[in-house]
Length: 307
Ligand code: GZL
Image 1 (tube, rainbow, N blue to C red):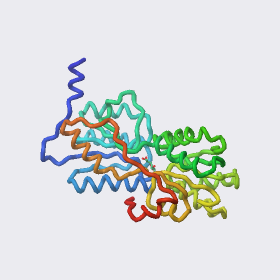
Image 2: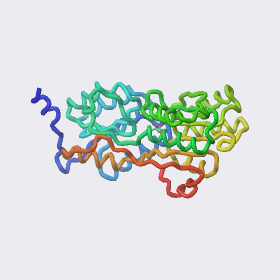
Image 3: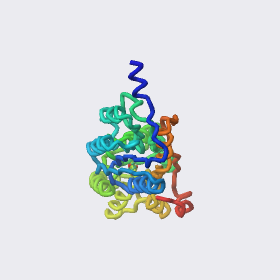
Image 4: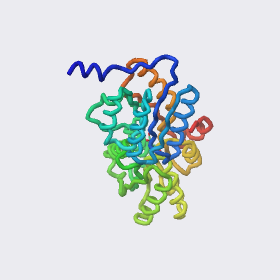
């Protein structure tokens, strides 16, 4: 058994000078966050002369798995995956390991029976983001109000963790109650449609919107305005990502709080890939630092926002 373990564990060290070929299985193009993340990966690869094989999963795990299999057939040096959902990855990760191609998970984590199937994770701490959102709301909403929640993609790590963290964070505030929760799939149109349904069902009982990302919050804000109400004033708006449009909306008082989830980690991904291919050890999980923007700081930081 030991012999097999040594064989499988042997790191692939790439010949110096050869153009690095990296396959990237992206989730899709569902949000402004995703666009910025794809741009960060593509522009950084171009800057470094890396041959990036980019695959848009169009929101489907089977497309991502197909792309990973194609990368293996092409014999890429490393594979990067932004796994759209948490489960179902072990078989294709085992195929990558058999081909001795290291896999870096970015953006979203997975549930796996064998952590050694991937080299490392680079992304944000979604539970911390949900906690920060709940903490902000508990301080600013006077401890009471009916909340409607716009969830991200079902089964995705950000949706699962942001939902759990927010509920955990509000557990000690019985006056702050989630009265409805539905997925808008991280899309602006989804946020608008779900909010229209919530307004029809709950009307003026809605005091707070908690959206798992800014695109859905901005879609919900549009629905609220079309219903003759003022988002940010009649209804408190809390979301996550801190895309430039949302930070501007917070500065204008149309949203009230957005928790950052930085997508610009292309440089970190390729630095890490280089280390792994050189046989260096890297940390298993690398979390990006995220801040919170509300009426106290949004206008000030807006000119510096990069995505
Ligand atoms: C978070 C990322 C989420 C963003 C959404 O790292 O997976 O997916 O919060 C995006 O905007 O669609």
